[in-house]
Length: 329
Ligand SMILES: Nc1nc2c(c(=O)[nH]1)N[C@H]1C(S)=C(S)[C@@H](COP(=O)(O)O)O[C@H]1N2
Ligand SMILES: [Mo]
Image 1 (tube, helix red, strand yellow):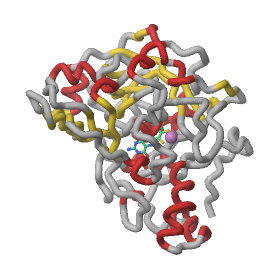
Image 2: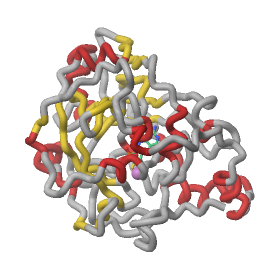
Image 3: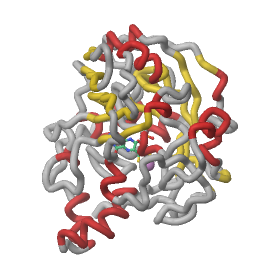
């Protein structure tokens, strides 16, 4: 049996309590009457796992695809974090991507089943110009830059990585939201044939969906990542386009987005629908607000022995605090 405890650097730090495992225990097991042992077997003993390529090397997953439009993007130094950049292969082998598996140490391999070309992103809803973008056209159209951001998962692990891509507000300028648009809803792909975690039996209602207020979406930090470490974004990180909202917990940034809708009402969100008390709509990083799994006061940099005090808004308060009273959850 494949116990969800990655083998090396993070053993025994006690902060790896996957979002989904928490949910499994408290809600799913109760709802279905399955035992914990049965559950672990269900998710980790291979009943709905696709064939994987055992020859595949991690390093092969972190390069640009042949024919992709990716080009090196000029770094924007303004947001450079206070800490060393996370080792690329460490970041590429420790991921949350529940469409494939909740096992973050092996998900990189399963995620290679995702076909990321061709790929279209539809942007619509309450906008003057609804558009459907072919991903390479979008990459060529948008002003590309590289941004080094911290990323903080609610499970208390953190990393600092160089995303390439464009500000979400640049996309807003193309589609022109109407004044009635108050929120933005992001939706990830739904492909049960490629993503074993989306096939029944599944704990979740797929596809993954997230949301922001329109003010948050228009904030200069809100970023669409199409690259990472100077090449195409790897599949395990959410190829070919994922949202990065660095002042919020990681789950607010949907991976492998296919649809972006401008809407009038606050949209439901994936984890909030599972367990609203633990996963608020806002989910701004806040050291003083414990999660159900425990205190959020400290964070642990993956691949290192370093830990830091968690910062309010993940340290991005000067850019985002004006949007909040501090009571948002
Ligand atoms: N579609 C989708 N997006 C997702 C997730 C997911 O399971 N599915 N996990 C989220 C969580 S919990 C985190 S912490 C980040 C992890 O991003 P990384 O694997 O690139 O570090 O992706 C977020 N986006
Ligand atoms: Mo997360």
